[in-house]
Image (cartoon, rainbow, N blue to C red; front, side, top):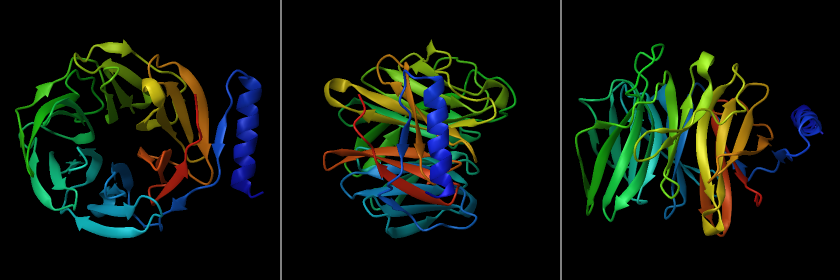
Length: 315
């Protein structure tokens, strides 16, 4: 047993002994790990189902990388000058939306990663996370976290747009602000339309938490999901959807030495258990994907690569 596995086993035993009602999960058999990229600043992960690829933002290189979602094979790189690409989401398996912090905009690509255009240029100041939900056929709501002047409390951290699909093109409305929750340094954001829940990661150290909001109004459902150490950043957020709309959230607690993934019930938002990934540390973005009847988790490892695991069945 190597040091990493020994450490994970020790942590699992320690947590389980302190909290016997929850079984700690350790995933130690990765499906693949992409080749490391030096000085990459890998951040967020999106998934295109029909093409079976993941799309990864590489902010320190101003690039977007595309990998095979089953074996991690590198497919292509897209250069984005002076962009600092950060958050990524995919709509209708047709459009890839990437927040560009330094360009103060959202860049839009098709599923082949051809550049189509931008929006938010007149409204965003420091965009980070991005998510969406479907309103009706061809009409989606896009939500972006704006982490400008993050050392100050703000009530306009989440901006939204109507995103309309017209064949192979798109149109967007003017921006509106979702609700008025007080937030500081916000990045990851994820929408669950079925339960009208929006999770937002608060990264300001004095306020570390994941907050749950009403997806339609922005009103606070749960101020703090709990379980986050004030020394470790809340980072990536993902969702696993099981039968009958059951499932669970995965919320990342980023750390060099105690990198954890907290699981919460999809409906009640109650804490379920904690998960560790073998030989994966300092995770920023994560993504989940359902392929061939199984759920998979993709996690950024130490800003340099993506490691993929098959998720066990969790009720």
